[in-house]
Image (cartoon, rainbow, N blue to C red; front, side, top):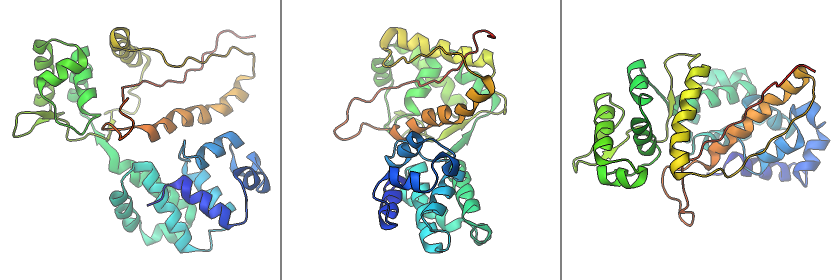
Length: 287
């Protein structure tokens, strides 16, 4: 199954546009797509997956809206790029209701996006969250197991995290008690929900105090075993209302890194590690 980027490139070539730039300009650029050319190029190159509205504009620009089969194929590739599973993408494409198809392609992309996210979601209870973020060892033991399909011994976790066996054992027992991890028949530990998106129990969970707690957890590990790979900064004077127009693109650039996420060591790319990627915009002073 082809991903969204490859499918769009193929359809664009078939529609007579020799390059991403030619298509972008012919359709009116940012006024039509609602994004910069660089953001559009990231989509065609596979570095990001568009929001439903932009996916719809691409489909419309390629003249696909009158061709139900072409739209469904594009939606299928959209699902595949979003969730990374060919079987699940095919299943979700089948269960998308005829009502959504009849309502129009934009609704179809919106429903596809919602379905793919729902399939990956794993809601957490408040008790699980309290345990998970209660101490550094518990957080990192869970982070390790929930980002790998393999089953781990306690000794494996000790080697990977640098924590003592006593601390690893205490952390994993707490995670077992709260149903966040499990043991297999060989007494190895694993996370049944590896690859899923863990959902907090409250909409406004990411308050400043919690974000500060996250940074403490990240900082503790990075200070011992990590390194800063990129730090890009900029100080400028700008209209706040105008600058906020860039926020969706900044957020999308972070979300686009999901495309590189792995839950096992890739063939030929054994250099996997845990990373934290943040975008932060601070207002320094009125001027």
